[in-house]
Length: 63
Image 1 (spheres, rainbow, N blue to C red):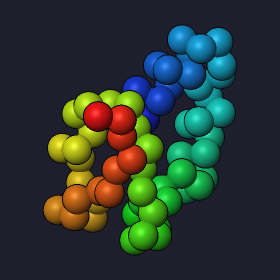
Image 2: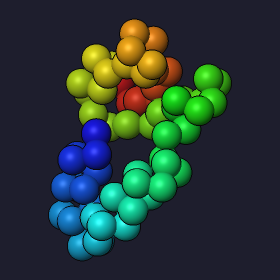
Image 3: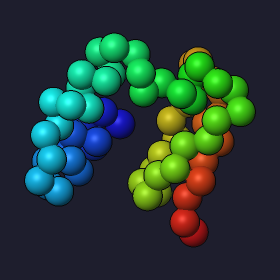
Image 4: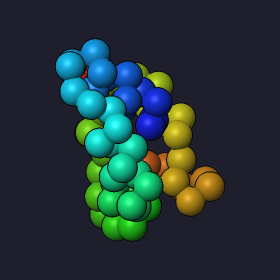
């Protein structure tokens, strides 16, 4: 997920180091910190990922 974020930021002309800085500070883990949060993604394979080992991550994703 982090690699994809960095790729998409760089492709869009943005500095991926900013996203990495957020990750290193623990700012972008809302799905792990807040049980009711949902992740918006365009990645059709994201449904495979899990939080806390085995819990399904609730998604907002176009069909």
